[in-house]
Image (cartoon, rainbow, N blue to C red):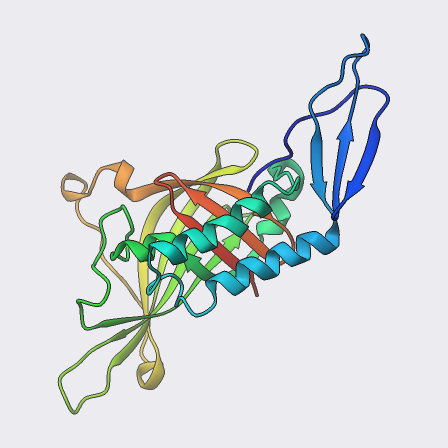
Length: 244
């Protein structure tokens, strides 16, 4: 999520329209010109969203992205973040509600499913990452990461399909930032084993648990509308989600 270039509050605004960008120069009581705020028109905003989704297409959520791809995605993302659409959870929190599908994560391009956090390496385990979703309940302050996985087996057995839900609680840090705190992992067999009951993985005793810094994470929502969300993680990860 990101912001308008400046706040403008006082008298005599003079709008300028050019290439779908609306700029507003304002003057204060002494007649001096304040900084310029820019806001992209709806048509230009739609074009920027299309550019971003085109850039992430074919990158398998970022798993096969190289450095050039990462930069090609980052550019339209930053343009959207600077489009003048301010994220403010005092009014926009309800927009988070629902189920979101991950379409890109720069963390995956690092070669690890954890990005800069601890995580299994991509392509080196008998594990295939399927769709990744986030389910957010703004009333209960619940924030679940849902991952579809295929686990390789010995031939001739088919791979085992499971859905892992990493359940979190979330809290607001400021008007556009969120902290999530891990609570538990629930594994639901899928595919041919979907009739089996789900299993909640046991928690480690407190003495063996990783520090809270590894069980929580923070991110800023830099762009948010009714169908697209962009976030920047506390370790620089760029993530793009589409609402279902």
